[in-house]
Image 1 (tube, one colour):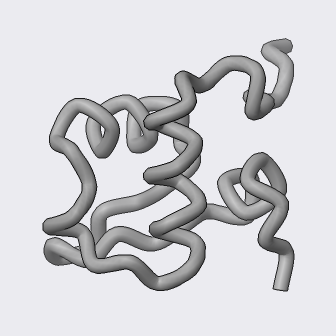
Image 2 (cartoon, one colour):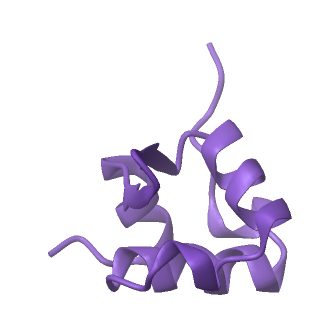
Length: 65
């Protein structure tokens, strides 16, 4: 069983991008490398070009609500 990703597993830039997505930031403002890594870690999903944080992604960036 794998452990949950934490903010310590992300670079400063990746965490900033994740926090931006959780706050409603448009996907075009997220660097492609960050988007790909955050999707790979299942912290965000890309639904028809719109980035949406997963529940785990919200926990990692501290935006539960």
